[in-house]
Length: 438
Image: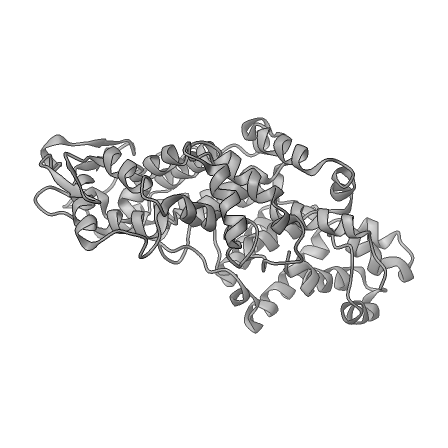
């Protein structure tokens, strides 16, 4: 069936990839603009000045006092309740923030880096640690990757998650050193050995977490003897370890490829595109230049839908398009229950490898959960743009509402029987292949 212009459809897609869903008016506002210049303006916007961010300040969460060794079962239970309550407050806050912001690219990047440096409240437990990490990801996501990577090595949530605070000179723990090389900065099989992991673990010894969540190096717990890392011998500490890993030839390709697969496509970039990305990243490990290079690369802007939207991207996109009042506790509760059911609750990645991507999200079970939630959101949202349109034009109208500029004949045929029932029409539309991929 005829739809919007090819340029409109392409603009809608790249806006979806750099945010959470998109609406027709949002596409209209950008479609005639110079895309690289728009990307510069988007990345240059101050995330803290966004009216939606100002309206959803991060909650202040003081870590509850842990019960002592002689504490009663009741005291331990109360402590567990406090931790769970704070974790729920934090998770709910981030969903509200993602829905509320006017310029979503900064929250999108925070989410992608949360998935890269995947850390879960399940083990960390202390919401204040997770909140502090979240703010570091938001603040450092467009700077020098070295600053971001090093901040994660000394981060309270990460130290808890990968046993860094139990890593001492007397009993080195290899978890953080191994995952930093394998998943965060270099990539599996990209030039490190088991000896490098062991030396890296020794370099990372001695970090402790204070009661207020601040981290510091305790000299008595740190191994200050010489270590050999990637063939170089010296007295490496956490900073030296970080620099040594990032100096490896494969690090830039790995970081660029990982961000590409989170932002642009479920498939790796072509060798030519990867060369362009690595060149933009450069010796300064410039994440703003890398992000810009991804969002303006012809292989990204010129391609068809190449990503299956994750549950968070899907849910937040629908809530934004339908203006579902996320300040309403019932709607927020529904959103959180949906993300739990679909397997992507913020602050709860399943492993240090993060959430999966691709077709896995399109299971039959998830389809039922999405349809149920979409129906509830359609009843809670603003459908006036559909209801005020003649039934014969409603398939195009719903596409415009949710930023889909073209329906296949098959999808249009499936939507046709629902044109007299706007809530069902919208619920079905946000579960079509055209909306679930971007």
